[in-house]
Image (cartoon, rainbow, N blue to C red; front, side, top):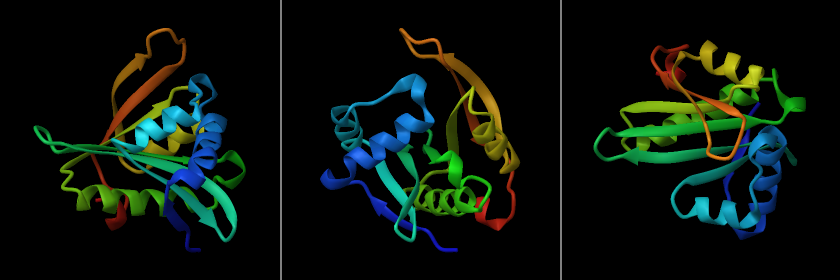
Length: 152
């Protein structure tokens, strides 16, 4: 299997937004929200052939801590097929290429598949929060251990 990963541009904003909103219905985004995120983060889409399987966000490393946030989202019908692992490997490599020395991620607490996936790959919880005006809880995790050389 080999995913095709493409950067989000004007023509793919809607696909990225729709994927995000399907996986995180507690915090839906508009096209304008996505365009704003594109100014500060690296947004990508992953395809298996012609079929969209997920999206990702890399928040670049913060200079004082060299911490990057890598969030990979896989649509439910494409989970447990290796897409998440392949996509995460690519996004971790990209974050490290940006100079990241610490990798964090964020998972919607209600997304038990995503939380289990992150934990199996060596991510450890360090905080929980709720966004202002919302009820959904998010879990912040950092990459503490490795699940094979691709995750180190």
